[in-house]
Image 1 (cartoon, rainbow, N blue to C red):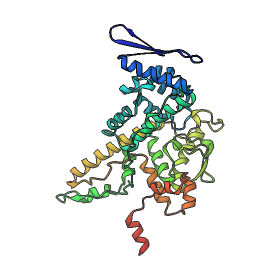
Image 2 (cartoon, helix red, strand yellow; image 1 turned 30 degrees about the horizontal axis):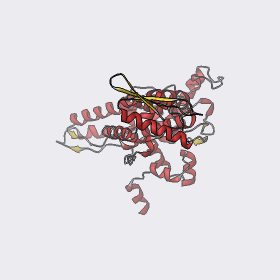
Image 3 (tube, rainbow, N blue to C red; image 1 turned 90 degrees about the vertical axis):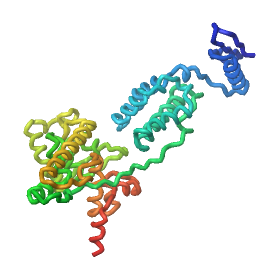
Image 4 (cartoon, one colour; image 1 turned 135 degrees about the vertical axis):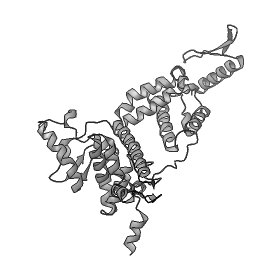
Length: 375
């Protein structure tokens, strides 16, 4: 029989002792809770299904996330992105709770809070990390009794698939007809040209041009080494990609033109004999998150310059020009452009997609381009 005794004025301690099992004890706020817990533990021991809950009850979500970052996340290719998710989860009040005390209702409440400020895909990524933490704790950290509350929570449906294409130029409406010809000469520049000019960065313009010419991911461009760039064959070799497979990416004449001056500068510094083990061998010495921030700032500045030019020329700005533009949209743009050159089976090899269905998410042909094929 379990032992229930009062501890102090407001607490009750339950103790369970059974031959063949370590003694178990836990403190509760009410006698009813203590009795219910003791009955459950004794029943599990009688049926031979009891497993220790002590570690799951002593480990907070914050501590589990920290251990997960050190032991699991560090070996992943997307460690930078996942580290950001882990920090976000650690900052929540729920992180102070022990793993064993977190229920699906708590996760559902957290999901709803996130959905107020973030898109479903972002929330899904965060829930996926939390779910993996619980699974790892149960399978590898000796917390066999721990259940995964994330598995019971209804997942939001992602509805933020992007179809954004890069504008080759801007469309404006004349307000008073003043300065139209002068403005139209500058209006021939597309979004990428304006973003590159507004960046003020030495690295961002070639990164932008390489991305839109090759459909390489941001991380693939940033981690690119000169030892894997063959300008004579017009090929870049990617030994490690997001999906775990190596691939070769063909370089267009424009992509080669982007890399040639950088290669000349690299050779002039005497780095051509390096073995690829240090940052001096990287084509672009910049972090992935720095590329994103630099691109966002450049888009904001380019939009402001565009608005100022429209006002000076008394023209109505295009509401879609240089708005809602992200760096990853360059991969969409490149894929859509390459689709007009290569058949599907070759395009999957260039872009690195194993499943053609995934490739279709990035292929967004313009209706007017399809119409020209009918004429």
